[in-house]
Length: 153
Image 1 (cartoon, rainbow, N blue to C red):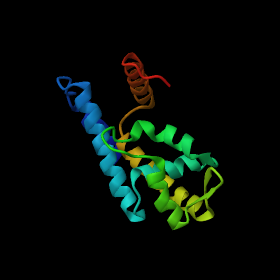
Image 2: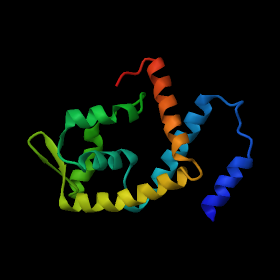
Image 3: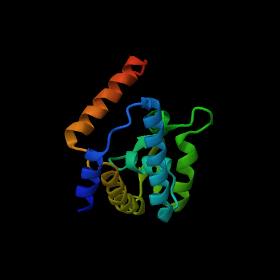
């Protein structure tokens, strides 16, 4: 019922096309960050720490690779690296490092699985009333804009 009411409420709402794409991007980004922060407080984790757990869930990775993956999320005005966020996860016993490779421990994998379910619920809530085809179109358009502005994969 909640999904129906949210979807029907949106369809009766006139979209605010007078606001720029920058307004919507920054607003959605901030709202996603806020939801993540609230969801992760139970585990006393930051969003970057969640992203590291997620990146390491398929298997070990080097610090260089983790930094490459996280670079788009770093604050451009601050000094931030994956190592900054890994330190606490290592102290908790969620991540182990052997030679140059970081990997999830058993405890880290277990917590990642629980967090993954929590994050999935948050994503579902944010995408409520958004059909799959509209979501795909949004992603395609945003990627095209990023490439037009000089982003390279």
